[in-house]
Length: 373
Ligand code: ATP
Image: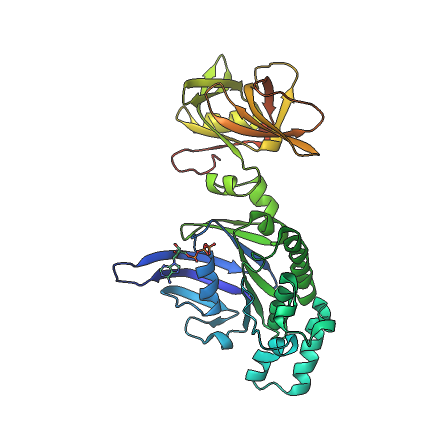
């Protein structure tokens, strides 16, 4: 069983020194056997450090790391049952593809026949069979990355670790390799842990995604759960493109109806009547400041003004083909984005009435930045 368990896992670089840095802050996470877990977050959030602690390339300064039932904190990297694929491929330029893939097995004194069998099998899976005699410089970026993956496969590890493996590829090749790695996961049935800063990679590849910020885990969930039910403003803003819109304001009750009033840089902005889910949440939260979160695709342009419509001015209209992105300004002076069908031409400075899908929208507490429940 290749379950990977992080308990209170902590990393401080240069502890006790003037330049010490607390990069990973006592995180708890269980990565299930055969799961594809993606760590995602902005630069510097601690995702690579976490992966490198699992790999044994970085000393653990607190907590416990287990793979299966075994505590791995002080176990040598080569004895952890893991294989890592790096962003820069780390291939030996003077060796053929065959030798690059066979290198680790030769070091561990695997018999020649077994090495050949494993390299042939990995090359077949990755479509490299015809090029085993070539050297890395005679390959494209995508082919080099495949060799790096092949080198991990031949070791038959319990756990594969990927550190931004597609960052050096162009956009088209990234999409292709993304699908290849997903297929590989299905075929090899191994536990895979994958680090990326690209939320599209995270959404398309992960069984579950762990979103990190400043050395902390912000949420761990399946991709769609993360998208539809973010637990805080950070996750809501990080997952999804264009990102979720946030409107700062307050809720007030008049004549039994409850309203959200936008508080903008220039004073009160739009006012919308709340229904069902948002009305219940607004009453729970009370009178204090609140943030309304609406995804760009949950905004609909409506022909007429109503008690629940946001009147906004179009700043820029970006036709994308199937849809149009409208960059808008509220009466309170806040900027936001709506993703609407491309069946209509919009003019700059035109005022439009938008309704938000209240069932799919949510409130956050501006102080804690957590979702209002
Ligand atoms: P990126 O996507 O940019 O690689 P990351 O989320 O993977 O970011 P880490 O590489 O894990 O981030 O780094 C986390 C933090 O730890 C960063 O602020 C980084 O500057 C710091 N850090 C990394 N390595 C060291 C080191 N050897 N000494 C001191 N600080 C370090």
